[in-house]
Every structure is written in structure tokens, then in C-alpha cells.
Amino acid sequence: MPQRQGKADASIFLRSPAGLAWRLNRSTFISWAAGMFVFGAALSGLLGEAEIFGDSEAFRMMMPYAYNFSAVELFTILINAIIALVCIAPVIILMFKLTGEELAQRTEHVLSGAVSRTNHLAGYVIIAFIASVLIPFLTSLGLWAVGFFMMDSPIAFGVMLLAIMVYVPALWVMLGIAVFIVGRFPKATMLCWAYYGYIFVAGFFGGMLGLPVWAMRLSPVYFVPQLPLEEVSSITMLVLTFAAGGLTLLGFIFYRRRDIKT
Image (cartoon, rainbow, N blue to C red; front, side):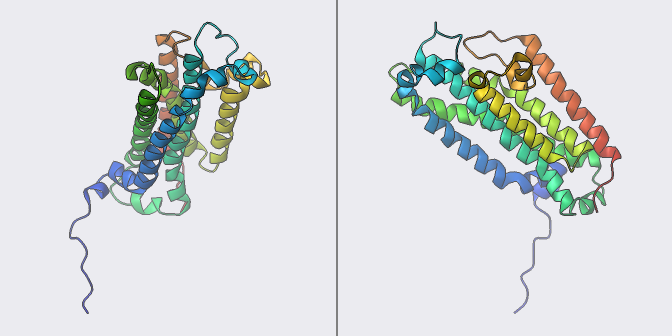
């Protein structure tokens, strides 16, 4: 029997660096997006038990300065922090897919054509950037959607969304670090994962472990205001955003200059 002929033209997702990056990352992207929506919905089921958690000593150790707020508000703040910390993981995974392709010696075939290194790296950065915004949004949507039906006085979606999206600049910092490592130290991806592990421990257990302020300040998440306990500082948000932009720019510069593994 004659062999089945393939398509005469490549898919639209393979005609640009961003399209190729999406084709390689779409399963991971969609899985994380759907999984985090379900994760947010599952966490909202705990809001009905907020009073029980709010009276526990461990909870008060994590929120020691917030006795003037209700247990539901405090528990929502804690949930938002957990969501933000977890949302960092897919951003790093999507960005480090590029190093995986390089280690598998497939990057050289892409760059041997008309694709520039800048455009190739930008494709992955775009996908990871979209994930840093969309995944927290979907998680917030899942958290609110289930909580709306389970709580007697549900929190407004806009309030809950802002409380989570305020962490996005911190996610951008982690994206910038990942881009910098891809550009300068492609074999040191475990350093980024180790730093992420530290951020998770400091953000979630820092209060319980009694970590000093200087140790907490090593995490970009530390500088994000916990709404509604604290007010949003535009200066802090700008500093985090510019830091992320600077790290990303350095990553692009080093990626253009370094050797590609062949």
C-alpha cells in the first residue's frame, strides 16, 4: 500500500518560534492550567472550616499580627500565598523546557535555519509569561467559583482576584531568574529549583520557623503585600517588575553570546 502523504504545509504553530514553543509546551501548559483551577476549587472547600483553622495555634503563628481580621479573611490570605507559591512551578517548568530541548540536541536544528537566538528564546519567554498571568487567574476563578456556593457571605471575585494577581510581579522575578539561568548557566537549572524550594519554605513556614527578616527578604514573595492586611505599594510592584525585566534582558544577552550544546 502507498504511504500516506503528510501535509504540504506546516501547522501554523510551527511557523514561528512562539508557535514552536507552544507546540512543545501545550500539554504541560494545559495540564497545569486545568490542574490549578481544580486546586483552587479544592482549596475553597476549606473556607467553610476557616473558623476551626483560625483558632489553631499553628495558624496564629503564621499570621501573628492579624488578630483584627476574621478567620475567613486570614485563611483566604494564607490560601492566596500558597497559590502564588505553587504557581511559580509551572512558570519555571515551561521556561526550562528550552534547556531540555538543548540537552536533547534539538536546538541546533532550529537555529541552523533562519530563526535567530533572540526569537527562539522569546518564544519560550512568551509562553511562560502568559502562564504567569493566566494560571493564577484560573486558580482564583476556581477558588471563587466553589466558595461562592459554599460560603454564606462569599468574597467578591474582584477582591479575591486582586489578592492573588498582586503576586504576579514576584512570579515575573522567578521567570527572570529562569531566563537568566538559561542564558548564562544552562547546566545550573537545579540552582533555580533549590531557590524555589527556599522561597516555598520561607513563604509558608517562615513564621513558624522563626526565620529572621533578612532571610525572609531573600524571597521576592516577601515584598508582595498581603491583601487586605496591607496596602499595595506601586513602588514595590515597579521594583519587582524592573528586576524581572533586568534579569530577563541579561538572559537574552548571554543566550545570544554563549555556545549551544550540540
